[in-house]
Amino acid sequence: MPLESAFEYIWHIAPHFSGSSPSERDYLRAVHHPSGLYVWATSLNLELLRLGYPAVSVASVWVDHTPQCWYTQKKGAWHKPSCELADLLIVTWDDHRRKAGRALLVQAKKGKSHNRISVSNKSTKKELQLLSGASKFLLSSQTSVASGRSPYPLNPKVNCEFQLPSYGTSRLQHCTFLQIKDAKAKRWPTIIPSWQTMWPPNSHPETYGEAILGMITQPINAMGKHFALGNMSNDWDRLITVLINDTLASSGGTARGKKQHTYLYLDSRNMDYPGSLNGGFDGEIPVSDDPQGISTVFITPENLG
Image (cartoon, rainbow, N blue to C red; front, top):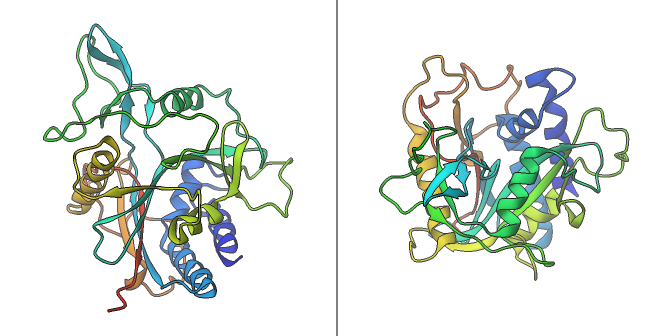
């Protein structure tokens, strides 16, 4: 389908950021590149037109920074950072008012095989422990603290302790793992799309395009968990509200040589097709000095009124 072709294009532009062997970060960064975003939005709308659904706009926020989940407690205090929350948040709004929608946390991995995610990596083990066991965690921007100290919450004005549903045998709606084809993969058939979602090591496989399209068209068992923006009475709504608000609050400011912390906001409604890649983001678009939040893709139905 056209959306799968768009992700193949995005996969192929990743080497512009890194050379012949892109990292996981390079593939994710390509998702948010102006060229990638334009192709993604155009292809998604072709799919929706074919299915009889309204057109959407796609807004992308690239934050070169990921909030940490601290879920180990010692003597009543958060003891150490355990893993990042996710690499990407996907939000599909119910309508153009952007008051409620579906959200999906995506943990990305670069892999050699299309039908299996390795669980031998230390970070993957920690992420599985967090997401499958439904551990209570504190969301923070800190990656380390002094001995005997606890990290600061991501937003000191909000309760940033959360607990999410645990994994059983059914696919979790609120999160998934994304297996991205390694440029040197030899066990990945050419006919298989380069972006596959599944629960490690190999449960609930689906292409990335199918997962995203399902979040919009909402068939039975579609991915993405519904949330109401601003509702602080349950953990899921509060988590997504904190992530969205803190991410969008980073849109001001300019960079002063802090390339490790870059921020980019693009909206397909305001874009013409970019003619060249120009090497990436740095130096092209204003970024924030100290971005917070998480890399996010917002998909919004057009106002038909």
